[in-house]
Image 1 (cartoon, one colour):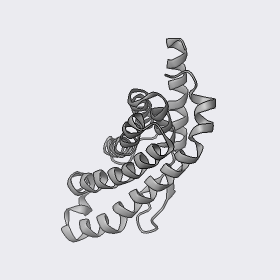
Image 2 (cartoon, rainbow, N blue to C red):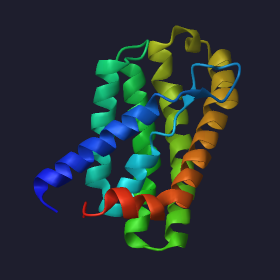
Image 3 (cartoon, rainbow, N blue to C red):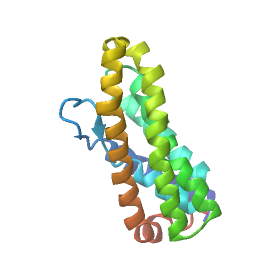
Length: 181
């Protein structure tokens, strides 16, 4: 595939991922600002098909679109946390699948990705969120938030995105990703 066609295809995949980012489903009733969206599925499938570079490019473009078109209430902090979450989710699967190019390799990668997402976001919310979100400066409130919101939310998000990817990758890649390698 020609370079221009690859660039166009990556642009379209970035736009599709951004549009999926607009689907916001609160998973935890008492923390409605934590919203699930399926936007990590497209970069993950792209990464499985053509490697981490294409995946990273889609994530960056998608988040830049979000900054420009639908910024978070905490400028750049929400987008940074979103990018951090996405990278911690997609990279383990892309790396494992690159070495073990089988369905079990993808499954192992997705399981590791769910753990990575949950751990990284726990640490990010433990250290970074209190700097921006004043209500998290109280250690009791922060602990409650981490245990009753951050951990369950990221586990659920990882499982849903992992299952969506695992069961739709073959059909999606045959139609949308052909020629990106």
